[in-house]
Image (cartoon, rainbow, N blue to C red; front, top):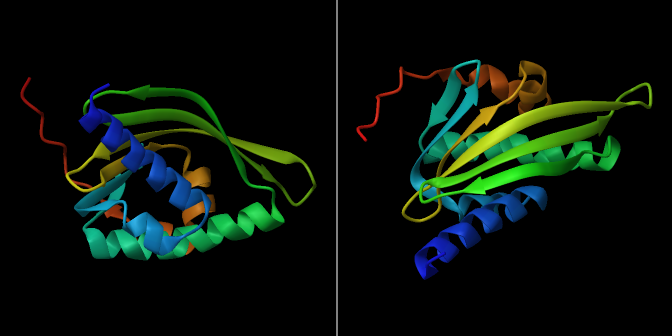
Length: 151
């Protein structure tokens, strides 16, 4: 990996670390100027730094509470890197009200930007998206049809 690729990888690692320490300022320091986030297959998303910050302001306290009260934890099953970003196949575990464990499998595609994360696409069940986003899920809007990239 080149020095530039190593620096980009460190950016994404810092972003993930900031998310897992529930630090809004640190997360936003790792996000590019015009981020785009999507939740698939629902076809919902958000655009822009202000919307991204509102999402993280709702999301991070929920994760912190779930970690403290429901033993929220993650397992990375596989991870792939290239010049565009990273793909992680992950599993989240949460203790439910009956004392059992709920499992949520999901995939996150994180794209490199100039100064940090350009965007994320999360492929998960609606139940997992609502668990992590809470009421913010209802603020997401349909995303436009993707524009094919030329090869």
